Image (tube, each protein chain N blue to C red):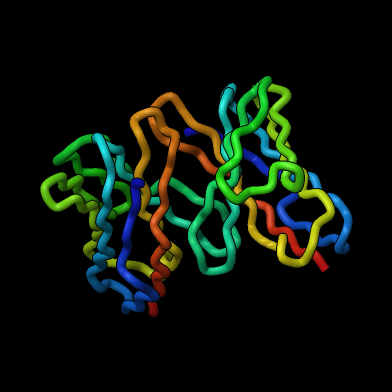
Length: 112
Length: 114
């Protein structure tokens, strides 16, 4: 079945450092790819998404590019802030917005 | 995006009691809603797909008689944890599917069973 793998956390960075969280997937067909963020005690918020190969999703300084050849969707941000501390989930879905599969999540802590 | 609310946001109950969690779509008519369970420091696990006006579809290993799902209207789905036990303590999150192949998540309900 479909699956999503993320880099192990926790990730601890200093403010203004560069962030990369790796995500790779296995899927049949052509899934849509997502990054969700979960702040402490809250539900998931969509951070960005890409629906086809070579698409780049971006939001709040975060970016991720849908790489079909490497089946990857790595999350990057050039300069993290303390407020970015959260758990980040990579996910995929079929093209009907259903059958979501989540990665295990990567906890990010940004220190001032 | 769509706005999804959950109620209550936090509940503590005694072992053996039942707890109902509501999931409301505030600005979108959702024919399909999803219920997830999240253990501490773990990812979301899909429990069931809730379909308006019909029976929910449960994932393998999820007891349908323990986790009762009702989706009586296009804006409300409920999850009832029957005869709750401490191992049912978890964070329960609902979501709705939009027409743009993404899901919008509620804020979650933390259940603690004593």
